[in-house]
Image 1: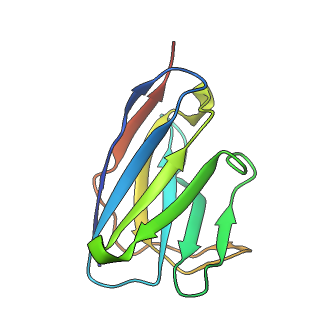
Image 2: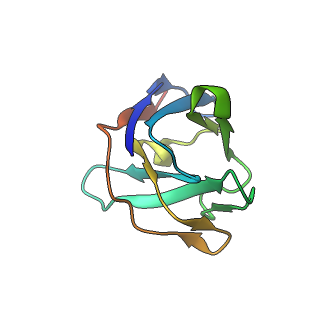
Length: 118
């Protein structure tokens, strides 16, 4: 499974962004990860499109949602009420996903930069 992220950019605090993850191949679940400068890459949210089960890290709960458009094999990360601490490179990846968390990713895309700043 190969993935390609897009949709990042500069947004003011409190604003919104919608990231896209275009998938080549089939996966039941996609997870979104982010990596801030000097920090490790962390999983923040995932969705299993078969079970409809999902996981959200506490840091994004209630602000980020993930969805999938099956006809386009494209997954989306809707980010609302963005904060400066959300600034990072965002990656998507095919992963196991359940309400307890997400598993390890096998293949990574190039990522897309999200910067939250006034």
